[in-house]
Image 1 (spheres, rainbow, N blue to C red):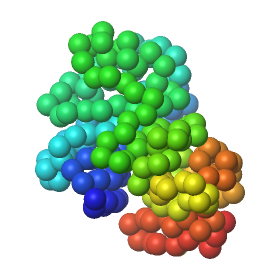
Image 2: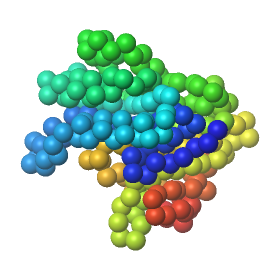
Image 3: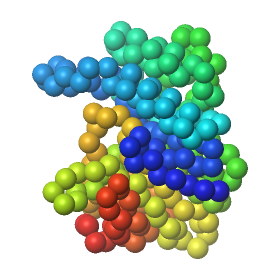
Length: 230
């Protein structure tokens, strides 16, 4: 199955699945309290997703968790943004993987009238789709690829910071899968530059299941191994 990085989204096209993660709807409200203003990022996200879904003739949109920013129940404004986001995406077939920020998301979607099941993990066509805040289970590790978000990965390159994709091979012979990390789609989130703390933050690396140092890092302008940047 063809895998294509969409650097300007950012997201991944896996066959005809359009995959994005870390929407963090409502993040701008918290930043606004500090005097940092980003108007309507949920509208930007919905527009980008709709555009690339159409351009790629995708058959399904897969959201890799952290749909909302709040850990618990959303504020009134965040709730309204979620309502607008899913209204804008109403014509797309959607699968949602639950992130660590997504408590009560199933309840919220049902209240909004959207019949979308929020799953802990999604397995399709021998591909595993997870958020990334927990270890992959045995079924995921037996797939050909595991796609995760959560890491907010970025690369400092030529004096600028770019959102980055990581591709890592297994570090254990009993693990068949390759790991693909996807940077956040939210335009507010610049990302976390890849460093030793990246390996500590991501369970799939912290556990030693995947080879962090020999992983490849991909950005719009660079391709480099992790061991050459940490």
